[in-house]
Length: 345
Image 1 (cartoon, rainbow, N blue to C red):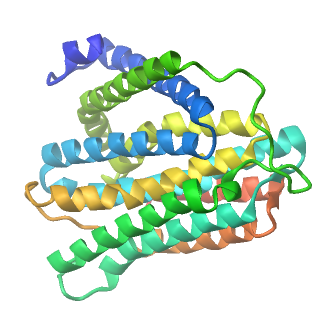
Image 2 (cartoon, rainbow, N blue to C red; image 1 turned 135 degrees about the vertical axis):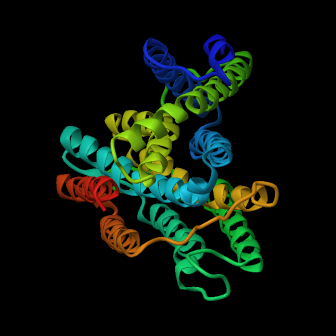
Protein backbone atom coordinates (compact mmCIF):
# COMPACT_ATOMS: atom_id res chain seq x y z
CA UNK A 1 0.00 0.00 0.00
CA UNK A 2 2.90 2.34 0.74
CA UNK A 3 4.37 1.64 -2.71
CA UNK A 4 0.95 2.27 -4.24
CA UNK A 5 0.58 5.61 -2.47
CA UNK A 6 4.06 6.71 -3.57
CA UNK A 7 3.67 5.72 -7.24
CA UNK A 8 -0.03 5.94 -8.10
CA UNK A 9 -0.81 8.55 -10.75
CA UNK A 10 2.87 9.00 -11.61
CA UNK A 11 4.84 7.84 -14.61
CA UNK A 12 7.54 5.46 -13.45
CA UNK A 13 10.52 3.97 -15.25
CA UNK A 14 13.82 2.24 -14.67
CA UNK A 15 14.39 0.77 -11.23
CA UNK A 16 10.95 1.81 -9.96
CA UNK A 17 9.28 -0.41 -12.56
CA UNK A 18 11.20 -3.44 -11.29
CA UNK A 19 10.60 -2.58 -7.62
CA UNK A 20 6.87 -2.09 -8.20
CA UNK A 21 6.71 -5.39 -10.11
CA UNK A 22 8.37 -7.25 -7.21
CA UNK A 23 6.02 -5.65 -4.68
CA UNK A 24 3.08 -6.54 -6.95
CA UNK A 25 4.22 -10.19 -6.91
CA UNK A 26 4.45 -10.05 -3.10
CA UNK A 27 0.90 -8.65 -2.90
CA UNK A 28 -0.33 -11.50 -5.10
CA UNK A 29 1.29 -14.08 -2.81
CA UNK A 30 -0.27 -12.35 0.21
CA UNK A 31 -3.69 -12.48 -1.46
CA UNK A 32 -3.27 -16.23 -2.08
CA UNK A 33 -2.31 -16.88 1.54
CA UNK A 34 -5.20 -14.94 3.06
CA UNK A 35 -7.69 -16.43 0.59
CA UNK A 36 -6.55 -19.92 1.59
CA UNK A 37 -7.04 -19.04 5.27
CA UNK A 38 -10.61 -17.95 4.54
CA UNK A 39 -11.20 -21.00 2.34
CA UNK A 40 -10.05 -23.30 5.15
CA UNK A 41 -12.49 -21.59 7.51
CA UNK A 42 -15.57 -21.72 5.27
CA UNK A 43 -14.72 -25.02 3.53
CA UNK A 44 -15.25 -26.06 -0.06
CA UNK A 45 -16.74 -25.06 -2.41
CA UNK A 46 -17.33 -21.68 -0.74
CA UNK A 47 -13.59 -21.12 -0.39
CA UNK A 48 -13.05 -21.35 -4.14
CA UNK A 49 -15.67 -18.66 -4.67
CA UNK A 50 -13.88 -16.20 -2.38
CA UNK A 51 -10.84 -15.83 -4.60
CA UNK A 52 -12.83 -16.13 -7.86
CA UNK A 53 -15.04 -13.15 -7.02
CA UNK A 54 -12.15 -11.16 -5.58
CA UNK A 55 -10.06 -11.66 -8.70
CA UNK A 56 -13.00 -10.61 -10.87
CA UNK A 57 -13.25 -7.35 -8.94
CA UNK A 58 -9.58 -6.76 -9.76
CA UNK A 59 -10.17 -7.58 -13.42
CA UNK A 60 -13.13 -5.23 -13.83
CA UNK A 61 -11.38 -2.35 -12.08
CA UNK A 62 -8.26 -2.83 -14.17
CA UNK A 63 -10.11 -3.14 -17.48
CA UNK A 64 -12.13 0.03 -16.88
CA UNK A 65 -9.11 2.05 -15.78
CA UNK A 66 -7.02 0.94 -18.77
CA UNK A 67 -9.94 1.47 -21.18
CA UNK A 68 -10.24 5.07 -20.01
CA UNK A 69 -6.52 5.71 -20.48
CA UNK A 70 -6.15 3.82 -23.79
CA UNK A 71 -8.64 5.84 -25.85
CA UNK A 72 -9.79 4.19 -29.13
CA UNK A 73 -7.38 1.28 -28.60
CA UNK A 74 -9.39 0.30 -25.53
CA UNK A 75 -12.43 -0.74 -27.60
CA UNK A 76 -11.38 -4.39 -27.65
CA UNK A 77 -9.64 -4.51 -24.27
CA UNK A 78 -12.63 -6.00 -22.38
CA UNK A 79 -13.00 -8.72 -25.02
CA UNK A 80 -9.28 -9.49 -25.13
CA UNK A 81 -8.98 -9.64 -21.34
CA UNK A 82 -12.13 -11.72 -20.75
CA UNK A 83 -11.25 -14.16 -23.55
CA UNK A 84 -7.66 -14.37 -22.32
CA UNK A 85 -8.91 -15.10 -18.80
CA UNK A 86 -11.11 -17.90 -20.14
CA UNK A 87 -8.27 -19.45 -22.16
CA UNK A 88 -5.80 -19.12 -19.28
CA UNK A 89 -8.24 -20.80 -16.89
CA UNK A 90 -9.52 -23.57 -19.18
CA UNK A 91 -6.21 -24.48 -20.81
CA UNK A 92 -3.30 -23.02 -18.83
CA UNK A 93 -4.46 -23.50 -15.23
CA UNK A 94 -6.42 -26.71 -15.90
CA UNK A 95 -3.50 -28.16 -17.87
CA UNK A 96 -0.95 -27.25 -15.18
CA UNK A 97 -3.14 -28.73 -12.43
CA UNK A 98 -3.84 -31.99 -14.28
CA UNK A 99 -0.15 -32.34 -15.15
CA UNK A 100 0.91 -31.62 -11.55
CA UNK A 101 -1.49 -34.19 -10.08
CA UNK A 102 -0.72 -36.82 -12.73
CA UNK A 103 3.03 -36.49 -12.18
CA UNK A 104 2.68 -36.92 -8.42
CA UNK A 105 -0.25 -39.35 -8.25
CA UNK A 106 -0.41 -40.90 -11.77
CA UNK A 107 -4.12 -40.05 -12.21
CA UNK A 108 -6.12 -36.90 -11.47
CA UNK A 109 -9.58 -37.77 -10.12
CA UNK A 110 -12.50 -35.34 -9.96
CA UNK A 111 -16.29 -35.17 -10.06
CA UNK A 112 -17.43 -35.09 -13.69
CA UNK A 113 -20.92 -33.83 -12.81
CA UNK A 114 -19.84 -30.66 -11.07
CA UNK A 115 -16.89 -29.98 -13.38
CA UNK A 116 -19.03 -30.59 -16.47
CA UNK A 117 -21.59 -28.10 -15.20
CA UNK A 118 -18.88 -25.46 -14.79
CA UNK A 119 -17.56 -26.07 -18.30
CA UNK A 120 -21.07 -25.86 -19.78
CA UNK A 121 -21.60 -22.54 -18.00
CA UNK A 122 -18.30 -21.16 -19.35
CA UNK A 123 -19.14 -22.31 -22.89
CA UNK A 124 -22.59 -20.71 -22.76
CA UNK A 125 -21.25 -17.45 -21.31
CA UNK A 126 -18.45 -16.97 -23.82
CA UNK A 127 -20.75 -17.82 -26.75
CA UNK A 128 -23.53 -15.46 -25.65
CA UNK A 129 -21.20 -12.56 -24.91
CA UNK A 130 -18.26 -12.87 -27.32
CA UNK A 131 -19.21 -15.10 -30.27
CA UNK A 132 -22.66 -13.69 -31.02
CA UNK A 133 -21.45 -10.06 -31.46
CA UNK A 134 -19.44 -11.26 -34.47
CA UNK A 135 -22.57 -12.78 -36.03
CA UNK A 136 -25.32 -10.28 -35.20
CA UNK A 137 -26.31 -7.58 -37.70
CA UNK A 138 -28.07 -4.90 -35.64
CA UNK A 139 -24.79 -3.01 -35.08
CA UNK A 140 -21.97 -2.55 -37.56
CA UNK A 141 -18.83 -4.47 -36.69
CA UNK A 142 -18.16 -7.09 -33.99
CA UNK A 143 -20.29 -5.42 -31.34
CA UNK A 144 -23.74 -5.54 -29.80
CA UNK A 145 -26.48 -2.97 -30.13
CA UNK A 146 -27.60 -1.37 -26.86
CA UNK A 147 -30.50 -3.81 -26.40
CA UNK A 148 -28.35 -6.81 -27.25
CA UNK A 149 -25.66 -5.73 -24.78
CA UNK A 150 -28.29 -5.36 -22.05
CA UNK A 151 -29.65 -8.83 -22.81
CA UNK A 152 -26.13 -10.34 -22.75
CA UNK A 153 -25.44 -8.68 -19.39
CA UNK A 154 -28.69 -9.99 -17.85
CA UNK A 155 -28.11 -13.47 -19.30
CA UNK A 156 -24.57 -13.52 -17.91
CA UNK A 157 -25.71 -12.55 -14.41
CA UNK A 158 -28.49 -15.15 -14.56
CA UNK A 159 -26.12 -17.94 -15.57
CA UNK A 160 -23.59 -16.95 -12.92
CA UNK A 161 -26.32 -16.83 -10.27
CA UNK A 162 -27.52 -20.33 -11.25
CA UNK A 163 -23.93 -21.58 -11.12
CA UNK A 164 -23.36 -20.18 -7.61
CA UNK A 165 -26.71 -21.58 -6.40
CA UNK A 166 -25.84 -25.03 -7.75
CA UNK A 167 -22.28 -25.00 -6.39
CA UNK A 168 -23.04 -23.77 -2.89
CA UNK A 169 -26.62 -24.89 -2.13
CA UNK A 170 -28.40 -27.33 -4.41
CA UNK A 171 -25.56 -29.71 -5.35
CA UNK A 172 -22.64 -28.75 -3.15
CA UNK A 173 -21.38 -32.35 -3.05
CA UNK A 174 -20.70 -32.26 -6.82
CA UNK A 175 -17.89 -29.76 -6.20
CA UNK A 176 -16.10 -31.48 -3.29
CA UNK A 177 -12.81 -33.38 -3.75
CA UNK A 178 -13.29 -37.11 -4.42
CA UNK A 179 -11.24 -40.29 -3.95
CA UNK A 180 -10.40 -42.91 -6.59
CA UNK A 181 -13.54 -44.88 -5.73
CA UNK A 182 -15.79 -41.81 -5.92
CA UNK A 183 -16.03 -41.08 -2.21
CA UNK A 184 -15.88 -37.51 -0.89
CA UNK A 185 -12.52 -36.52 0.62
CA UNK A 186 -12.76 -35.44 4.23
CA UNK A 187 -11.58 -31.93 5.11
CA UNK A 188 -8.02 -31.53 6.35
CA UNK A 189 -7.61 -32.37 10.02
CA UNK A 190 -5.72 -29.16 10.70
CA UNK A 191 -7.60 -26.88 13.04
CA UNK A 192 -9.52 -24.19 11.13
CA UNK A 193 -8.51 -20.60 11.89
CA UNK A 194 -10.37 -18.73 14.61
CA UNK A 195 -13.01 -16.13 13.83
CA UNK A 196 -10.52 -13.37 14.69
CA UNK A 197 -7.86 -14.83 12.35
CA UNK A 198 -10.43 -15.18 9.59
CA UNK A 199 -11.59 -11.57 9.94
CA UNK A 200 -7.96 -10.41 9.93
CA UNK A 201 -7.25 -12.42 6.78
CA UNK A 202 -10.39 -11.04 5.14
CA UNK A 203 -9.22 -7.48 5.83
CA UNK A 204 -5.69 -8.23 4.64
CA UNK A 205 -7.07 -9.99 1.55
CA UNK A 206 -8.97 -6.83 0.63
CA UNK A 207 -5.84 -4.72 1.22
CA UNK A 208 -3.77 -7.12 -0.89
CA UNK A 209 -6.29 -7.04 -3.72
CA UNK A 210 -6.46 -3.24 -3.67
CA UNK A 211 -2.67 -3.19 -3.80
CA UNK A 212 -2.67 -5.60 -6.76
CA UNK A 213 -5.22 -3.46 -8.64
CA UNK A 214 -3.40 -0.21 -7.94
CA UNK A 215 0.11 -1.47 -8.68
CA UNK A 216 -1.10 -3.22 -11.85
CA UNK A 217 -2.64 0.09 -12.91
CA UNK A 218 0.71 1.79 -12.25
CA UNK A 219 2.48 -0.87 -14.33
CA UNK A 220 -0.10 -0.92 -17.16
CA UNK A 221 1.28 2.14 -19.07
CA UNK A 222 4.70 0.49 -18.97
CA UNK A 223 3.13 -2.71 -20.32
CA UNK A 224 1.37 -0.81 -23.12
CA UNK A 225 4.56 1.02 -24.08
CA UNK A 226 6.51 -2.24 -24.03
CA UNK A 227 3.92 -3.96 -26.24
CA UNK A 228 3.90 -1.01 -28.66
CA UNK A 229 7.70 -0.73 -28.79
CA UNK A 230 8.01 -4.47 -29.43
CA UNK A 231 5.62 -4.19 -32.37
CA UNK A 232 3.16 -6.65 -30.82
CA UNK A 233 -0.65 -6.57 -31.32
CA UNK A 234 -2.62 -4.58 -28.74
CA UNK A 235 -4.41 -7.82 -27.76
CA UNK A 236 -1.22 -8.78 -25.90
CA UNK A 237 -2.11 -6.10 -23.31
CA UNK A 238 -5.31 -8.02 -22.51
CA UNK A 239 -3.32 -11.24 -22.10
CA UNK A 240 -0.85 -9.59 -19.72
CA UNK A 241 -3.69 -8.09 -17.63
CA UNK A 242 -5.42 -11.47 -17.42
CA UNK A 243 -2.16 -13.18 -16.42
CA UNK A 244 -1.64 -10.61 -13.67
CA UNK A 245 -5.10 -10.84 -12.16
CA UNK A 246 -5.23 -14.65 -12.39
CA UNK A 247 -1.84 -15.22 -10.77
CA UNK A 248 -3.36 -15.70 -7.27
CA UNK A 249 -5.82 -18.30 -8.57
CA UNK A 250 -3.11 -20.06 -10.56
CA UNK A 251 -0.89 -20.45 -7.51
CA UNK A 252 -3.80 -21.58 -5.32
CA UNK A 253 -4.99 -24.10 -7.93
CA UNK A 254 -1.52 -25.62 -8.42
CA UNK A 255 -1.10 -25.90 -4.65
CA UNK A 256 -4.40 -27.78 -4.46
CA UNK A 257 -3.30 -30.06 -7.30
CA UNK A 258 -0.05 -30.88 -5.48
CA UNK A 259 -2.16 -32.05 -2.52
CA UNK A 260 -4.18 -34.31 -4.87
CA UNK A 261 -7.23 -32.03 -4.56
CA UNK A 262 -7.94 -31.92 -8.28
CA UNK A 263 -11.58 -30.96 -7.78
CA UNK A 264 -10.61 -27.94 -5.70
CA UNK A 265 -8.10 -26.94 -8.39
CA UNK A 266 -10.74 -27.26 -11.11
CA UNK A 267 -13.23 -25.30 -8.99
CA UNK A 268 -10.70 -22.48 -8.87
CA UNK A 269 -9.86 -22.63 -12.58
CA UNK A 270 -13.32 -23.03 -14.10
CA UNK A 271 -14.97 -20.97 -11.37
CA UNK A 272 -12.62 -18.11 -12.23
CA UNK A 273 -13.47 -18.44 -15.93
CA UNK A 274 -17.17 -18.33 -15.07
CA UNK A 275 -16.76 -15.29 -12.84
CA UNK A 276 -14.43 -13.54 -15.31
CA UNK A 277 -17.15 -13.56 -17.97
CA UNK A 278 -20.34 -13.76 -15.92
CA UNK A 279 -19.45 -10.74 -13.79
CA UNK A 280 -17.00 -8.81 -15.98
CA UNK A 281 -19.23 -8.43 -19.05
CA UNK A 282 -22.23 -7.04 -17.08
CA UNK A 283 -19.90 -4.66 -15.21
CA UNK A 284 -18.32 -3.46 -18.46
CA UNK A 285 -21.76 -3.10 -20.05
CA UNK A 286 -22.83 -0.90 -17.14
CA UNK A 287 -19.59 1.09 -17.27
CA UNK A 288 -20.05 1.70 -21.01
CA UNK A 289 -22.87 4.11 -20.11
CA UNK A 290 -20.35 6.69 -18.89
CA UNK A 291 -17.08 5.42 -20.46
CA UNK A 292 -17.04 7.02 -23.91
CA UNK A 293 -15.95 5.12 -26.99
CA UNK A 294 -16.93 1.89 -28.80
CA UNK A 295 -17.10 -1.49 -27.07
CA UNK A 296 -16.19 -4.40 -29.35
CA UNK A 297 -16.88 -7.79 -27.79
CA UNK A 298 -16.95 -10.02 -30.89
CA UNK A 299 -14.16 -12.58 -31.31
CA UNK A 300 -12.23 -13.05 -34.53
CA UNK A 301 -12.07 -16.33 -36.55
CA UNK A 302 -8.83 -17.50 -34.93
CA UNK A 303 -10.18 -16.91 -31.43
CA UNK A 304 -13.44 -18.72 -32.24
CA UNK A 305 -11.46 -21.70 -33.58
CA UNK A 306 -9.41 -21.83 -30.37
CA UNK A 307 -12.60 -21.55 -28.32
CA UNK A 308 -14.23 -24.50 -30.11
CA UNK A 309 -11.09 -26.61 -29.72
CA UNK A 310 -10.86 -25.73 -26.02
CA UNK A 311 -14.50 -26.62 -25.31
CA UNK A 312 -14.31 -29.93 -27.21
CA UNK A 313 -11.03 -31.04 -25.59
CA UNK A 314 -12.22 -29.90 -22.13
CA UNK A 315 -15.46 -31.87 -22.49
CA UNK A 316 -13.56 -35.03 -23.48
CA UNK A 317 -11.23 -34.49 -20.51
CA UNK A 318 -14.08 -34.07 -18.03
CA UNK A 319 -16.47 -36.85 -19.12
CA UNK A 320 -14.45 -39.78 -17.63
CA UNK A 321 -13.95 -38.03 -14.29
CA UNK A 322 -10.22 -38.77 -14.33
CA UNK A 323 -7.26 -37.53 -16.35
CA UNK A 324 -3.64 -38.44 -17.07
CA UNK A 325 -0.51 -36.72 -18.34
CA UNK A 326 -2.01 -36.77 -21.83
CA UNK A 327 -4.95 -34.54 -20.93
CA UNK A 328 -2.72 -32.15 -19.02
CA UNK A 329 -0.36 -31.91 -21.99
CA UNK A 330 -3.23 -31.34 -24.44
CA UNK A 331 -4.54 -28.37 -22.47
CA UNK A 332 -1.08 -26.84 -22.14
CA UNK A 333 -0.38 -27.18 -25.88
CA UNK A 334 -3.66 -25.38 -26.66
CA UNK A 335 -2.64 -22.69 -24.16
CA UNK A 336 0.74 -22.34 -25.90
CA UNK A 337 -1.06 -22.03 -29.26
CA UNK A 338 -3.27 -19.27 -27.83
CA UNK A 339 -0.26 -17.30 -26.55
CA UNK A 340 1.67 -17.79 -29.80
CA UNK A 341 -1.24 -16.78 -32.05
CA UNK A 342 -1.94 -13.72 -29.92
CA UNK A 343 1.66 -12.58 -30.37
CA UNK A 344 1.83 -13.66 -34.01
CA UNK A 345 -1.72 -13.53 -35.44
